Amino acid sequence: MNPEDVKDQFIEVLTEIQTDSGYGETPISGKTCPMTDLEGFDSLLGVEAINMLADKLKVEIPSNQIDKIGLSQDGKQSLTIDQSVDVVCKIVNTGET
Image (cartoon, rainbow, N blue to C red; front, side, top):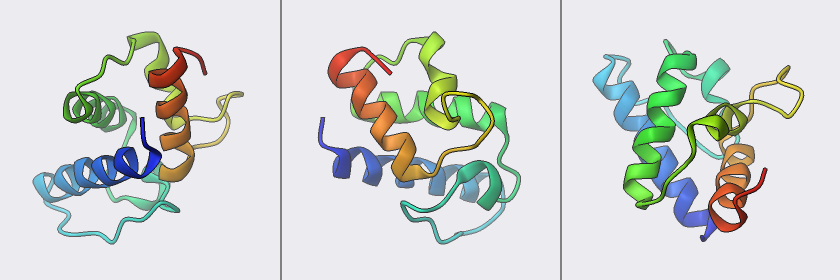
């Protein structure tokens, strides 16, 4: 899976969520951390975003892997979009994190 394609799709999903949530068009880039940089974004929206991304990419992301996409391995730090894309690609390409 191509990281740039995943990133583009992820940004599209996050933009859609922000717009649908009434927060307008927030500038989103690879350095954006959804949990801290996007207004109103929380863990429930994070799960929804990953499910929407999986649908757009036409891939399966196991439910036990979803939390790993938004958080560091120790669970203490939220990831940027670029970091999350790396995790998604690893899950989809190898089934590992």
